[in-house]
Amino acid sequence: MKALQYVEIGQPPRVMEVEKPTPGPGEILLKVTAAGACHSDEFVMGLPEEAYVYGLPLTLGHEGAGIVDEVGAGVTAVQVGDSVAVYGPWGCGVCPACAKGQENYCHVAAERGIVPPGLGAPGAMAEYMLVDNQRHLVPLGDLDPVENVSLTDAGLTPYHAIKPSLPALVPGAVAVVIGSGGLGHIGIQILRAMSPATVVALDVSDEKLQLAKDVGAHHAFRSDESAVEKVRALNGGRGATAVFDFVGIEPTTALAAKLTHPDSEIVIVGVGAGAVPVGIFTLPWETKARAPYWGSRSELFEVLDLARAGLIHVETERFSLDDAPKAYERMHAGTLRGRAVIVP
Image (tube, rainbow, N blue to C red; front, side):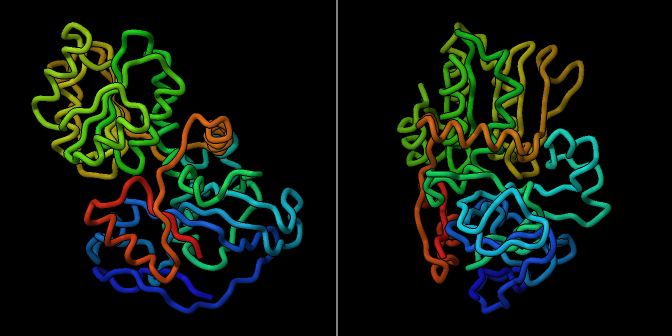
């Protein structure tokens, strides 16, 4: 079968011929219907050799959906022919975090070598994908897999980041989204669907700012020093109650720190080297900073229910498996509108 693999450090991924997997006990083989491309893939492929830990060759794709093609012994939760999405942050399944469905925070995954698909295990950018356990599958039902596969990360990650902040996002509050690309444009929709706050998008790209407006941002400003005054002007100089940074580099985290008010929150979601200082004489009093990762299994059900209700959608551009390397070229160039989805 064909698979898009990262084969050589520092080189673009290539479409390769690999052996079709066979499910063992407890495993499920999916005929892939869609796989999402993510900036995390680009981050992984940009690592120098001494920092790269994901193994080679690596079949990419941590956002996956498919039709159940075969099941191993003991699998009872899904049947051949079911349309499913893959919950990506695999854990041990039995530690305290996993018992709550928070496999994204599994206590022992690292020490036991448990890795997500596309980030160590073979991913979804292939004609077939092996899933290790039925608990990692969520029914898609009548949701279009191509239009919704990216919700398994690009929807789940912002949902997990935003949900704890919702009690503070009351009428009159301002929520800022920095970076309105693949994750950010869904984060904007989640905020609009679940809070009465004024939603402000910041980006350096006019195209991304237009996308932010198209999906519901109340305001969209250039992500520079002028944004501080513009955001503060929206509520009499107070500033943002919550800032969600979907970029996570030093300029954006520094900007986030300038946007907040006392008892506010900064949530760094983007995979970058940025950070915010936390101390008595740094951020406004009682300002909190979080760096969440992915999301829980139960939250993925909630995200898909938001999509079924028509409250969120993913802007997608489709690529065949043969053209999948071009999706990453477009991502690197910053010319994608929303998410790239690979359709084998």
